Length: 210
Image (tube, rainbow, N blue to C red; front, side, top):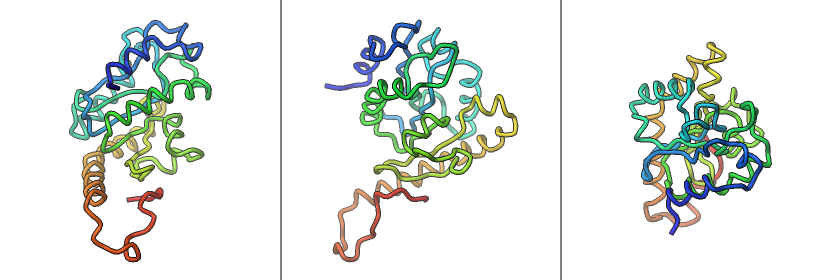
């Protein structure tokens, strides 16, 4: 039976791309299996590679502050990345590396079944919103394949570009409201259909703004 521990063990043993032979520690992700919020970053950095945990460097400290603004403790959410091993020199993930890790991430999403997925940065955003610009859609809750997904700036971006800090803080302050909206959407979906097909709302699974 699939579970988060089994996935984590497979990630630590993974050699599906060259990064598996370069890392000190793989970083499967961490958090409860019933987390209502799942945050997906881009890839581990130096501190994450050293500790085998996601978001433990400076951007992780800022992420903890952002979660507190939203009324969450780090232990309440699940945090991971699109790739589970650190690229050399903290370079951007390559398409083949993202593809090699995709099945790990997809299984985590399926098991946790979060109410809201937050993508942090453009590489995790591209998994759900290919071709989109983060400056145009950040903070907007959208339905993608039946899930509520919100693209946000990576915390590291705000550390390097202070002008982005206010935007990312404002996006996180809305997180509780986004979760409540997602809960309402899920309840509506789960209710037995009481209308005929001719009167039912159309496009329920299409990408749409709340």
